[in-house]
Each structure stands twice: as structure tokens, then as C-alpha cells.
Image 1 (cartoon, rainbow, N blue to C red):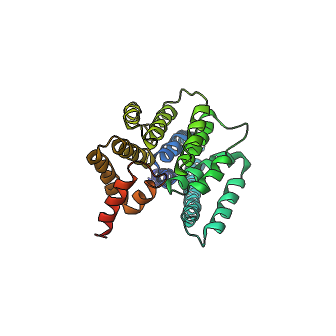
Image 2: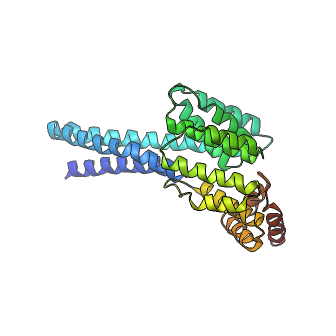
Image 3: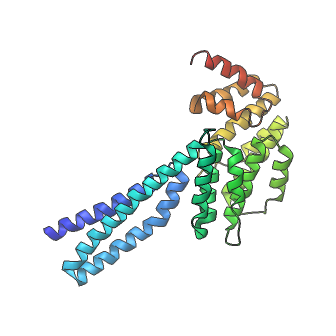
Length: 289
């Protein structure tokens, strides 16, 4: 009975470590990536420990328990490090803390050369989600080197396209999209199509923007950024076509999900045909805050 209890405790510790490691990421794409990477490792480790227990019964179960405890400790420490990283990401929006936070984030990226591109990508995307596009640019540009995968290169270029659009440089965004290498990755193709629709909508070509947007399939691992862009493109496209009611409905859907502050930033990064509609909507919403 004692050996069974030790094994149950060991498996519980390993399972808890896996759950903590996966759940500490807020973005579903990151959670799935962690699960795909650690799931097979978890199963393999369990089988190896079971084999060890069969060969050396007194030793194997306690090794399993010790492995579970170590993995749990690593998960707890990793969660603490991620919380500190998130605090630095949040501090970028604070003018008084921005410089020190960016210095720590750059140090985090540079600390491990083998993971520099992956860490830079994580920080850049998190900053972009927080509408800190100027800071995000530096981290996207830090994603370089011969070991970059085609998907990482595409992510880097698409991130820089979004930065260009947020800064109102439509020509730069269009140029980067035109120079993006052809890829068969479905998520990249969908995002490219959505960004081309955004360029058309911001330029006032609402009909073509909506047509292109309808052909963009939502990537399986997309998050709030895709949904926000979809509603904004629709709002700008409808406004450009003079369909104010539909444009306002798209803006109201954005406001309901992400709030006044998020909408106020989004419709001015950059401004477009729907910006006057959004400003009127925000004035009304602010009256009830």
C-alpha cells in the first residue's frame, strides 16, 4: 500500500508541475506550445520511472517522488520569473519606470543566446498586445540570426508590419508585406490577408477591404489581437463606405469586450475612416464612467 501511495504522490507532483507550467501563460498559443513540448516528456519520464521501479522496486518509486518534487519546484520558480517578467512588461507603459523596465527586458532577452530569438519574440508580441509598439519594434528587430525558423522570420516581419500600421506608416507596412517571403503556413497567410485588408480599409477602400477580410480564415491559435483587428478593419471599412450603423456596431462590439481605454488607443493607432465614429462613441461612454 505504501508503494502505491508514493507513486500516486509522485504522479500528482508531476501532473501539478505540468499544469502550473502550462497555465502560467495567458495566451492560448503559448499554452498549447508548452503542452506539446512537455506532454511527451511527461509521458516518457513516467514510463522510465515505472521501468526503474520494476527493476529496483525500493529505489524507483522514491526517485519518481523526488523527480516530481524537483519538477514542481522548477514550475514554481518558473512561474515566479514569469510574474516578474510580466511586471516589467506592464511597467513599460509607466513613463517613470519605462527606461528601467526596458533595460531589464533587454537583459532577459540577451541572457541566453540560444533562446534570444524566442525570448525577443515573446517580449515583442506581449508589448504589441499592450499597444507599446515603439518598444515592440526593438524586440522584433532583435529576432535575427541564421537559426531563425521560417515561421519566426514571418512572425518578425508581420510584427514590424503591425508596428508600421500603428505608427500610421501605411507605405512601410505595405512594403514589408510585399517583401514577405511566400509561405505555406496557414496562420501566416491568414494574418497577411487580414493586414492587407487593414491597409485597404485605412486607405478608404472599404469594399475591397471587406472582400479580403471575408477570405481571411481565423488561425486556430489566434487570440485577442486577431479579434481586435477584425473589428477595427470592419469598422474602418464600413465607415469608408458610409455604412455608419454597421461601423458603429463593430466599434460597440470592440468596446464591450476590451473597454474604453483599449478602443481609444486602437482607433488612433492609426486614425482612419472610423475614428470620428469611435470618438463620438467614446464621448458617450465616458459620460457614464
